[in-house]
Image (cartoon, rainbow, N blue to C red; front, side):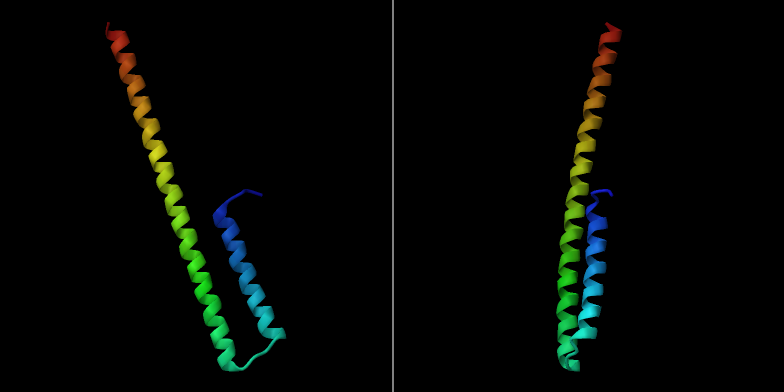
Length: 87
């Protein structure tokens, strides 16, 4: 199994959904209490999703910066090679 944060997050969401469904079946509450509970769970899930999205965005930016550095180094290497050949 890969160590992919996005995949782990999807499993977390699936587990939360299943847990919420089972909890509703085995511990029934009044309609108002159930709506409050579901609203709180949805809000927590939304916050976690936003946090995970920000982490993915930050990692993407890091990868882009590393890629730019590699390209710059490669261009410098090519330029030095040209100078050596033309001498």
